[in-house]
Amino acid sequence: MRVVGVMTDLVPSMDIQQWSGIHPAVWYGAGVCLLIYLYGKWRLRVLPNAGIAGPPPTIFLGNLKQMATLGIVDPCRRHRKTFGKVYGQFLGSHPFIFVHDLDILKEVFVKNFANFKNRMAMFQILNMNPYPIDMGLIFARDEAWYRLRNIMTPSFTGAKLKHMCGHINTAAESLARNLVEAAEHTDATYVKEYFMAFALDTIAATAFGIQIDSQKDLSHPLAVNAKNVFPSSFFNDNCLLLSVIFPSLKPLLKLCGVYTFTSSVVNFYRETAERIVVQRRRRPEEHALLLQKKVDFLQLLLDAEDRTTNGKAQAKRLSSDEICAQVCVIFGGGFETISTSLQFMSYVLATHPIVQRKLVEAIHSEIGEEEPTYDNIQRIEYLEHFIRETLRLYPSVPLAARETASTVEIKGYTFPRGSVVVAPTLEIHRDPEYFDDPDSFDPDRWKETINPISWLPFGYGPRQCIAMRLAMVEMKIGLIHVLRRVEFVRLPDTPQVMEFDPKAHGRLAPRKAIRLKIELRQHQQTTPSIS
Figure 1 (tube, rainbow, N blue to C red):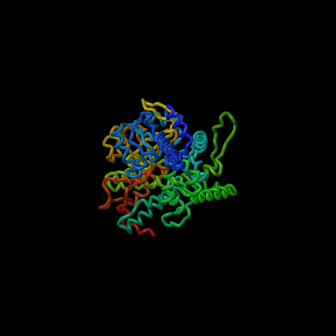
Figure 2: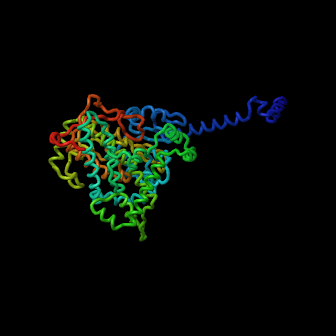
Figure 3: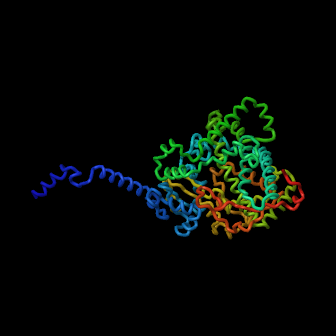
């Protein structure tokens, strides 16, 4: 007993380095690493503790490695078969719960909207947006979102969209002329380039009231900046990935100029919007004459007011920075989604010539050679069905996500606070439980009643894309002008089954850019070449 007592007295008094032969800094470093490791493991217990199964994550990375290799879209079908309609994955340490069950999604998007009102797409998770992008409607949260939505909703009514059709027709006529030239001079065309030009021309006109032809004038500042809205470099991409793995590094990375939107592009649109606003306020009568036939989004935002007074007589307008944020989001989001969707539509038309012929006949029988308007395009039912079916098979945004404000149980599943509920749009659209022969292209399926929540290219519920009707009008008018003059024909290397790019995270894009042959329609063969 005496020996034990002597040893016990001696050990604490001995220097740790003499006792272990290891420098104390090594011990401290090992202790810190152990704590970090345990913290990382603890964060990955959120979903298992809630009873949500899924593929095993890696500490700190979560399932990022699999996502980087396979993308988000492809594994969804496999996980659906393995884990059922509800399963979990981790983006870094962010818990994602993928839901294929329409009843649960209706609860998330509509019935229990108050608990899932905040969107949580990739940009929100990164939270690396330059000021004032976070004021954009798609990024706004809680009361800020309610306020913006109430102010902006009147800008997207049918009456307002009717006045925007003049801008859209001008851009669509330019698109048709450019495709006629392609038919006359080239045997194979990368169609995305033409649709990007159309989307850009349309957005420039509907957002700012500025008429450009970006296919002819590639050096126009609006064209140059729109194509550079998302920075792409090895340094920036990897720093953004680092911000997902270690969120605490975000302030430092922002100081180094790492953003999801190119800050110089944001500044360009901000300065452009401010300059136009000053001009219109100085000469309101002159601009009022211009707006008699055509309306642009910037003016609608200037005129918009929040009329939800909560019992008080007040009207709140958008600030200059808020207006700039909305315009930047329109350019960044609408430019890519519209052009990608039209690219898929041209591919479908080329690979389904019978559908293309029926669509041309439907356009001719319903409106003939009339100029497309907001009212007459609604009569072309087959055009509506064609677009819906294309967006079912090829939704440009393949996921819709909402953040869980507080822990809730739905249909026996627990959704922890802070988790992100994801509707895998593409896989729901191709699920045989919801669509017969889901991988086939059949516009006529839309003659029947279909559960509205099974079609999610624009989201669903109160946070459905506010510009959905504008996007549909743009695509309809663009297709009408084009199909009156040219037809799309597949080439020998046009794939029969579309393969998607696994690296196009957050959006759906073909693995290879789509090339098609453009041919003049029969009645266009004898028309003179357009210079």
